[in-house]
Amino acid sequence: MTNRSFKVRFYKTEVYKGKRGTTYTVRWSVNGRRHGEAFKTAASADSFRAVLLVAANNGEPFNQDTGRPSSHAAPAAEVTWYDFALRYVDMKWPRISANNRISTAKALTKATLALLRTEPTQYDPVEVRKALREYAFNKNRRDEASSELRAILAWIRRNSLPMSAWEDTKHVDAVLHALDTRLDGTPAAASSAKRYRRVLRHAIRQNVLADNPLPKGRDENAAPKTSGAVDKRSLLNPGQVAALLVRIASRPRTGHRLTAFFATLYYAGLRPEEAVALRVEDAVLPSTGWGELRVHTAAPEVGKQWTDDGEVHETRDLKGRASGDTRTVPVHPALASILHTLVAQDQLTAGDLFFPGEKGGLLAGSVYRRAWDKARKTVLTEREYSSPVGKRVYDLRHTCLTTWLNHGIPPAQVAEWAGNSVPVLLSTYARCITGQTVELQQRIEGPQKLPDAPLVPGPGGSLLPPLPRAPGRAR
Image (cartoon, rainbow, N blue to C red):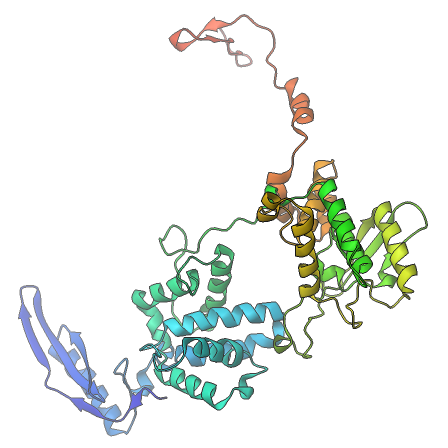
C-alpha cells in the first residue's frame, strides 16, 4: 500500500502526573509522522512498546495514518476508500441495471473527492470527475482511459484516505455535504441524495467498518426527506392533450407514429420505456370496443457506455416485477383505433415495434422529448408553457392514472394496470384524487349523525348531548 513505510523511530515513554492520576504515553513516528498511545500503567505501556519494537525488528511495514504495523492494522485502516470503491463497483456491476450503475458511479465520485488528503488542484476539475465517473467506476471502460486520465486516477489512489476515515465525523460530514449539493453549491434533489447514501451503506455489509457512519433519524445530517407525490399542476386536461396530439400529428414523416406513442401513454398509462419496447404481437386489438396490451419488457435509454451489449437502450424486465412477469393493460377504444391505423399505415407485422425510430431501432428519448416540448411551446399559452403542466412526457402517464382513480376504478386494479404496488400508487397520487368529496360526504353523513336528544349545558355554557350510560350501570 502507498501509505506504508519501514521508517519507524521510537522515543522515550512520556510520563505525566496529573490530578486524576499518572499516564504513560508511548511515542513513535512512521516516516516522520508522529503517533502516541496513552496507558494508565507503566507495565501496559512497556508491553505495547515492546510489541511495536518486535514488529519493526521483524521488518513489518507500518501504516503512516494509524502508526500500527500491518499485522495489527484493522481492516478499515488497511483499505483505502478508492480501492474499496473499485471493488464495490466490480462486485455490483453484473447484478444491477444500467441506470443503477450510473447512480453508483455518481455517488462514488462525490464521496471519493471528499475523501482525499488534499484537493487535486493541479488537474482540471472536470477532467477529475470524468476520470472517476466515466472510467474508474465504469467497469466496461476502466481500461480505456487515456494516459492523462490514468495519471489523475493514479494520483487519486495515492491520496485516498483509508476506510478508517469514516470513523472521523469530520470526514463523514464532508461526504454528506458532497452528496447533498450540486457542483454550483445549490442543494441536490432529495431523491438523489438518498439514492447516493444507499450506495455508501454497502460498506457495512462488507465488514470494513464496525458501525454505520451515516446518520439516521433526526440527526441534522440525516438524509433529506423526499416526496414521491405527483404535483397536481403537472396534470393535463383532455382539451390540452387533444390539441397537443393534433399538433404532433402534423409533423412530417414521423408525426403519426409519435402521436400514437403519446396516445398510448395517455390512454394506457405506460411508462415511456415500456411503450418504446412494445411490439404489435403484444396487443389484442378488436375491430371495435376495448382491447388490451400485454406489457412484459422495458427499454430505458441509459447510454451505450453503461450497458453490457453496447446499445443505447437496456432491455430489461418490468420495473418492480419478477423476471419474465407480464401485466395486462386495457386499451381504450380510441387508442385501439389509433393503433389499428398505425399498423395499416406503416404495414407493421407481428414482430415489429409499434413505435420504431426513423432508422428502425428503438425510439430515442431525445426525439420524443424534443417533439413534445415543441408541441407544448406551440399549443400552450406562455404562462402554461412555463408552468409544470405536461412539462415531462411522463406526465401523460400521471394524467392517465389520476383519471382512473378519480372515476372510481379501485386502487388495487389501477395498481395492477400501472405496474405499481397499492401503497406506492396511493402515496404518489393521493393529492390528485378529486371530484369524489360530495359522494363521500353523503356516505358518512347518516352514520355519523347523533340520535335526537335534548342537549345539556356543558363546560363554559356550551350545549352538549348527554353521554350514554354504560350498560348495566346504576344511576
